[in-house]
Length: 349
Image (cartoon, rainbow, N blue to C red; front, side):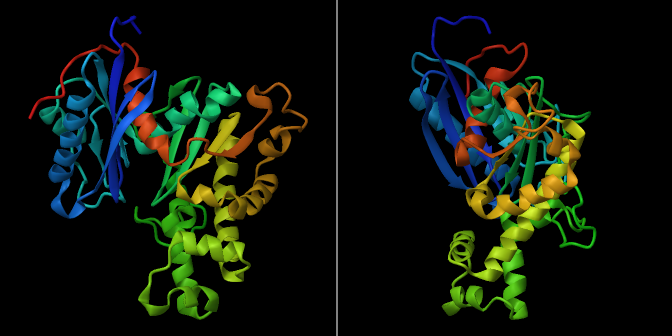
């Protein structure tokens, strides 16, 4: 990047199916400020884009003094066609099929706009600012377990996009062919077995079957069961809740085993809200990895073929950056583009 006499400013947008966040960021100080808004899916994609762009304009006006705008980064749910920036049947953004997200933002904002899948943005943040930096590795694979299951892959220091920007959709790899229905239309996807949504759906099925009286008691008076309730029940010995997390860990382990056998990367990062229950998920996950991935069994830290690997072997770890990974990744995305050109702007109405 060409040295600048003025400090750089970027704007980051983390678009989710439930909420969206927008932040102002500098490399020296990190996130200066952020705005969180509900994603108004019922109002349609154009209204959501206007919400995003209004927040970008507001933060840019507040923090642009004396700073050069390096760009606006956006992390969006996928599948996302790149470089067109067009969405295709995104399971977590109903009504957005075929929507030209990049073009609609360019109509409203001046300055360079970079769009990636939300999982790619999170993977970039973990690579540049989190575990990748800590372990000094140049490649990693990240799974984000939230409403869905996102997947970002970095190979030799670069985001891997595939032929049309849709590479890294491990959330829709089939784990159990006869498993639960996924939002993509398939059955038994990793997303249908290991996301936060999958956890809650499994709990509801057990309650309906009468096999989870403890969890049913948590729903008394019509109060909805939450993921936090489920985790607390498991940690306090509820067998049904523990079984749900064990099944989720097994699904995750099966999915990871395939990724490890294919890529042989030094680092696999598990992020998203479900990763907060690492203690409940990881025993069954590692059990599946040992059984199903001969690459993992040979290259895990301390194993026969681990010594020459970056980072000391194949590591599977919870994300370091937590819930901020997606937003941070969007913020730094403009700083990691090849042949990036600086420009001013944002004020287009």
